[in-house]
Image (cartoon, rainbow, N blue to C red; front, top):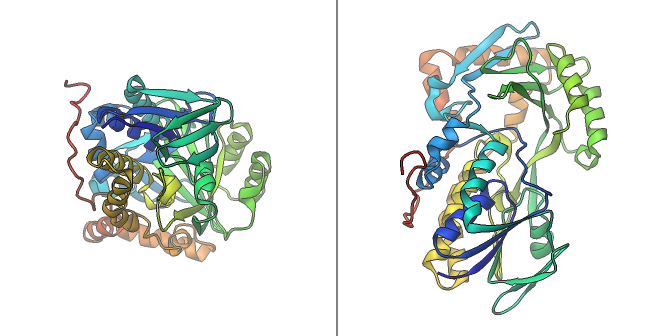
Length: 403
């Protein structure tokens, strides 16, 4: 069906949507606030139905070739002694390390390169105003003047500005009492293909993960109820983390040295976005802008990919956009609800506040490596990434390496 569609956001869901909408015969424009394509970001995993979407786009093998090479995760003590180790093959696609681990920027690059031949990409601009009329949406850009589209789709992040323009304060933010800081540091002598997780008293965690470029990706986690850190400037956030982790031990001094020099630092209050409806008039939300499940759910990327696929497919099936939006919600809402079923207890278990709590955690993790308990743990910790029957909308692509 011929429609003109504006997509805001060029990360994961946006380029996925652009490719499918073009494949279904629509004219697509993607606007991205960043001045150029952003290939930064930390590790993400693609599981279940999300991986199936990549397969239907012909991109599964391409994404696998761009993976980080992470082979598992080890929980270590202050002397770097392994207390528990979970290799990827122990759980298949259900463990802490998925079969497809990839940097956000690398997956976004794959999707962008795959979609830009069929879409107009506008970098360095954003929506300033929307006028939703009976036969289209008049969009005023901050820099690019005014244009008219049949539909507008916000594929932005958890703090989506387009969502605020259209829905106001309707979105509910559910905090999970956790802060995370992400950044890249030089690879160290102890950094191999295993991710390493270290806990320090006070609800503090340090996670180091590999890539195939000779760097290490660091995550500092702080189990803390919302206290305003998210409102600070990046320099102030770096200062808070430096002060809070100063006596954490292990390899933290090296990590904090890298933090001071990092130019890709990103900090967030971990939480979820919940909305009663994902569309209003001719504007609809997809991905984190609509239903961010939080990084600790293991579902964010898969929800973005699957949501983009279902939304594009339903728009191809329905002449009436309202019917398409309703079908999109009806199909996807149960999947989203499962993906957002994350307890606030999780961060407290993952980041114990006392030395005794850390000792108990290590005993439990070591026990979990035993065969019988390991199988049960794999079932309990598996994100519900395959808990949806993906509709077949046709127009799937052959694999790029096997046309």
